[in-house]
Length: 293
Image 1: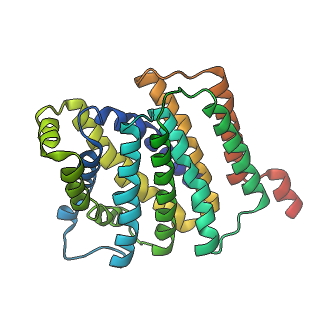
Image 2 (image 1 turned 180 degrees about the vertical axis):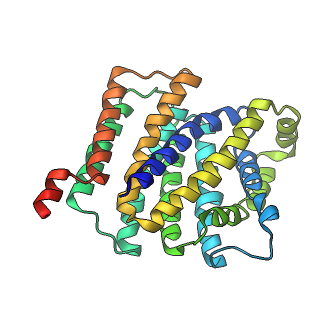
């Protein structure tokens, strides 16, 4: 994997990690389904600047195939899970089980076969995540955990469709994909959250809530998934997916700094295992390269 692409993957992980703090802050002002709908409404605005006549860079079946699991399923489940009790740090950790779902789906859909080094690296990294999880705060609801796991599975499915779509322009793809979720989620918001709660949210919206919405739409949605889709298109899913293991490191670090969540020595040790597993999975070992030569 080329160094610029490794750095891009790390940057995406950082943006997505801080994203969990933004979600937690935004949920103070907006209910989860309305929040998700507004996120994708904002992310789809560049369609107006790019022009509707050109159309999406991929067939509509792929636009819908990505937009439904990614926007209409994954994020509502994640936002709802965090709204009912998942902390930002724990959510950033649990959601990365999408790497397992992605690798599993890729075996059947793409014929990918992760090598022994990739498998060992992922096992090492998830051992680190397990170590971190032992000191996560108690009291998070079982429902929140199950919702976040379901969101991870939906993300894994979206990763596979991105890989198959092979979009030539990932930014345009994500803009058009963002057109799919808003209306269904807005309808769901009216049904589940009610007009009164929606009106109250708009009437009491703060600059923090607005900032969180802009960060999530522009950073995590447009930049994050466009870059992630680019990586998934150029490398096997089993090679790209381990980078998501960096997300909880950034997520828990930013949560500790901005939300006051604890970050103990044991969590740092778990983070080191995650980084070691990532290095084993994605970096070429000089000794092995010389031996092959």
